[in-house]
Length: 190
Image (cartoon, rainbow, N blue to C red; front, side):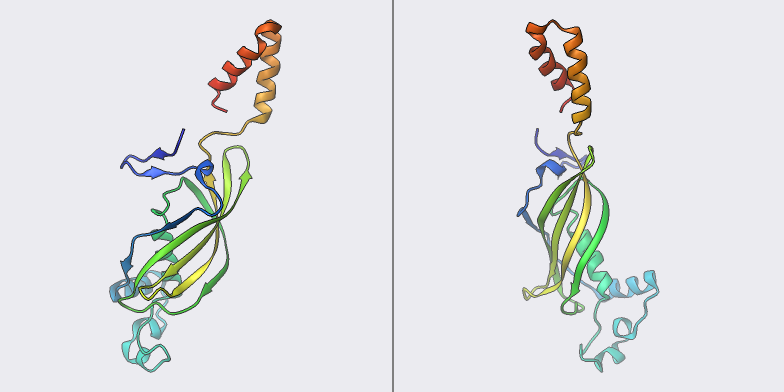
């Protein structure tokens, strides 16, 4: 079957396409002072180290730094394309570490790796991702685990399969029951 494509032609991965150890690297982007100030406006976090150059110069950082949550938000955006996954929800962030500041002008990219996969009902799977945000010097500025719910391409239906098999065995004579079961099951895309 393979991965599906979006309206733009991008490959969209389903739960079945993801394997432990799969790894992607995003495009790079530069963090601007304008973005940091816009994030302060959006969130209301006007901590001086993020918006006041004179104040920031007197800190151990020696200049304005991005909000930690801006870094996490940029990572979220960068990693939506590498990989492009049919994600339904972000359900957990754990062990998130802010290792080193993100400065104005830093060029960052995201590295995403599948840490674990597990069933989550019939229509979805749960994926644990190890994600890290890396700057132009190769320093990990943030990292940790994110857990998402990802849509399956094919709905699991072992209960329905049992019902279908029982119905087919009552309708189709025994010598052809196996052929009929395969046909019916095949039409359900199990």
